[in-house]
Image (cartoon, rainbow, N blue to C red; front, side, top):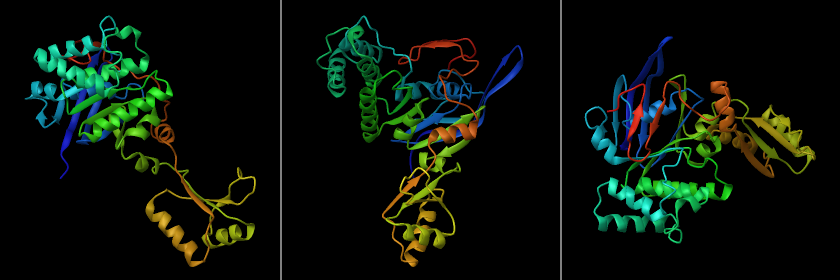
Length: 342
């Protein structure tokens, strides 16, 4: 049985304002296996930030049961805090300090001895390719370097679960690929990543499992490929070497149309959900008729299509409603105008 880094059942949260009670989370269930990347997606105000705030002990839920890193959220909040790390969208790097000093400061906050703190800082500087810049102030770092330092600061406490918000915002393509590899390496070491992002291609690239949240309710969950198959418009493209082969295939399959974007008009598109069963059936029918295409490719809708179809909204920068707070992203110190922290 797979161990779960997060297990939430019936998670609820609401706030009261001048217009009455606003339900932000309406009884959601989450199951996040250890050593995976789990991505929570949703439009503005869907409840993503509230979910992360609850799971990272910043605010209390109104209902439901939650276990994080094997600890009960309601009774063992301190243990949860010791097992997790939070890297928010906005960097917690002190730009007046050097890279090494930032890491040593985090080691002090984690109550590591001076010796252990220096050892841990040296390990992380090496791991994140920041050794040459260790003695330079963070204000001189590029955006990608600052983001790497930010994540390194989160790792000082060796968390097994990291809440990672918008990890590549503002990064150039090379820095973004570098961050992707860092995340994959963390997961390979057994770390669990809870990812929130507005870059749907980022979720597609990294996530093992995706949950789509809208108006406080989970409306879809699954792997990226499973979610894409929920949306119509997928097809299998079969390319042939001559008109006769294409016509024979069309007659045999009894469905499909010639791809108008193919200048040679030798590509046949067959509607399909992209699943293994439908592909196997199609290939079996072609084989029975002794038809062999020169090329075959599977096309499914992307996550943008999934998002727009299921929510009817465009992605954008997210700020969940009724959350107005400042959070120290690594230590968990915060002020919250709407809720009392655990």
